[in-house]
Amino acid sequence: MSAPTVLISPTELSALAQSEPVVVIDTRDADTYAAGHIPGAVNLREIFTFLATSTAEGLTELKGTFAKHFGAVGLSGVETAVFYEDALNSGYGQSCRGYYLLTWLGYPKVKVLNGGYSAWKASGMPTETGVVAPTAATFPANLAMADVMLTKEDVLSAVLGKSGSEPVLLDVRDIDEWIADSSSPYGKDFAPRKGRIPGAKWLEWYRFMKPSAQGPMIKSPDEVKAEAATAGISPSDTVYLYCFKGARASNTFLALKQAGFSDVRMYFGSWNEWSRDPALPIETGLPFAESKPTLAMAA
Image (cartoon, rainbow, N blue to C red; front, side):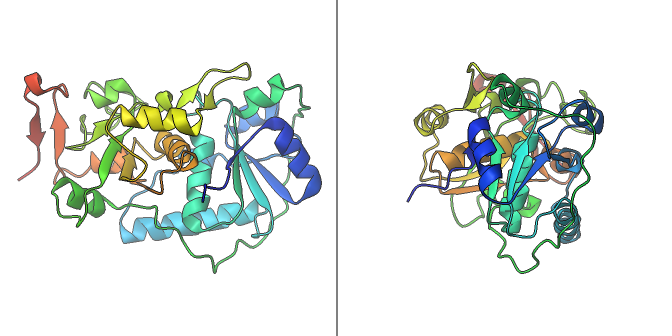
């Protein structure tokens, strides 16, 4: 059975909004949102900015924070949530981060606008300015959460070969982060350590998108499978994703799920959390055999 279609086009979103309850969620910053957005869309910037940790307390806070936020913008379980950003290659996957969070929380109806606001405008759709006041609802508390969230202990078990299976660890960060030149997209020294999680494969998140007349779009299922195959990853693998804080990895999470990869999970704390714990191993140096990478780990 194929995965439900998450990506939605501007014309499909317009039709959906006229046929059933929809909450359109703009994940951009408040000023950009106010300057022009999809009519009726509400602004929820925390989708992108919230930094999570994978401790029990951190995950409890993450769940509670977003159950509150999603209820505040009007999600009761009846409405379809549709996330968008400016363009899929310019917002670091922030709309997909919303999709991942609602997937984890077990919310039944989630879509992402393929191509984002740029595609909406390129399609000649109407826009509006100002701020929309959302109609609050009670986010459902009895949803069955999905097994898509990894802790740093889960990842460490995989690195040490103690996970009981052989998951593929996939790093989708930008190349300067992968080669340990920068610690984050926010500056080279934003996080305390540069490097990679040992044993990770690498596919830069951009590779799962392609240009179109309406801006970058997620590639087709066959194209996504072909990209994954270049790193030796197949749809039957269990894939553990990470980036810096779970946004770019959410873009890849969506791409892989749409392509039929059945077991995809994410280390949402990602490099932001991993790099701050000196007890966790990292790989430094160029990721080639001849560079003889060293493992850096506190005693």
